[in-house]
Image (cartoon, rainbow, N blue to C red; front, side, top):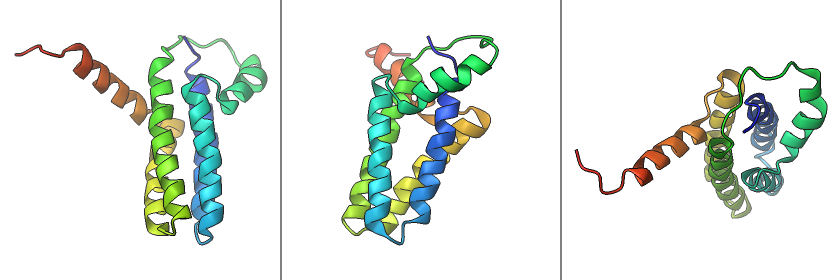
Length: 142
């Protein structure tokens, strides 16, 4: 179980990183590098080891009141895998010279991160819930 404010904190940092990638997208190699670094963060986050969460746990959370409730860590970890897919695809696109595709994938990840950061809507978490419903109801007919 995790403090739900942690993923939102990480989403704010992710938002800044993705905006930075778009701002430097006129230099595709630089934008690809920024996305590659974010992809590493997503990969670590999918394993519960995000550097953003480490900052939250050690610096931010001790200064806050305890959370009203905790949440399951599986949906946010799944969301990190989804973010990883967008970041890797965007980075590859930039490195391959397909800047528009890189911008599109970066923009899609940015929308998801900004929604999570600003209003707490985690699109990857919602995908996880859909995935769980589909996989646990296999073979069930109405």
